[in-house]
Length: 264
Image (cartoon, rainbow, N blue to C red; front, side):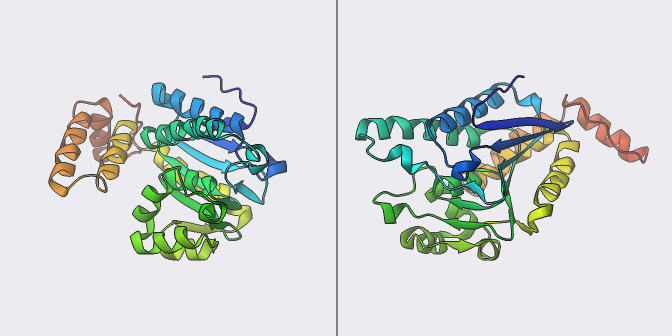
């Protein structure tokens, strides 16, 4: 597929891995309407054509900013109607991230605040540079988080910690984010992408149908009661049984070799 965007750099860096870079470095990769629209279009395309990659790494251009949220210069003086229409685009791309069948690793290379923090949380897990900073400052600006942060943050760190973060609007460090369960791993700035890509390679080498079925089942763990979640899990499990990859996995184990999965 040809992903030709103005504010996103999409690269197939190696087989099975896609790197998506939010690229407005002069604004620390703040989202304007163009970037919001391109994020929506990207994740809608990936939902329709998930075979283009087995794992995605999402990051920001430069060393200072992952994404500080919406570009408030663009929003200055924006009418209520235009604001709502712009936010509807955000809602579409966040839903697209949630429904993306391909695992997404956030490589947070700097400031991740407001909507930028919500983008990171919409990924499957987060690796962060040690100097990264996080915050939900919306209540200090007269609004509230509206890109699923109030849904995803409590799932990462618990409701009480999430209330403290969101209701104060205070920033927190990458170390605190790791301690609270928001971030999986802290990395040196220079090794962040290397470590994220190393994990992406492990995921991309696994059976794609199994990975995607497992991802959906794990998502259901926080959405359904245990019995209903297990029913979904069994349905997803049964999708893997008739696949060529299941046969290849057993053969490779018995032949003491690395499996060659094909996503079939």
